[in-house]
Length: 119
Image (cartoon, rainbow, N blue to C red; front, side, top):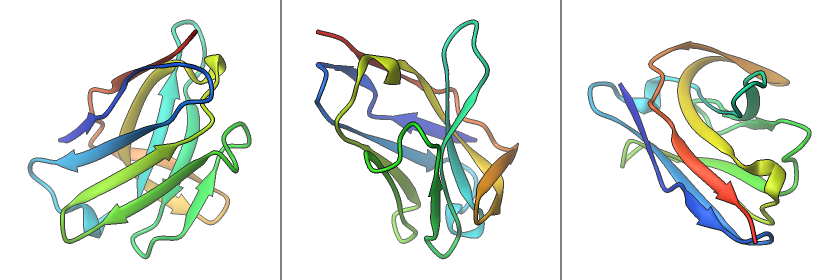
């Protein structure tokens, strides 16, 4: 399974870095996606990163969020800058089927980590 960490509370304009690690799989073998969900709303694709490090992003986070991976450490990161209240959600990572324009979750969801942006 995947495990997310790094969530928390931050003021608007602040930054957080989320981490996605694995307990029983090698992340280097899978494209990974970051998704977020707010109660009552559909899950939203945030970022996707291929095994080679190519990325794509949801329109609402382009230019503010950056996905990266450190295969030697078995970690995928999501750097989130210029956070806004509308970024408040539970963020989860998952193994995905990656395409240059988006990705679809396939397996190995994490439990999620809460990100709250408020003043």
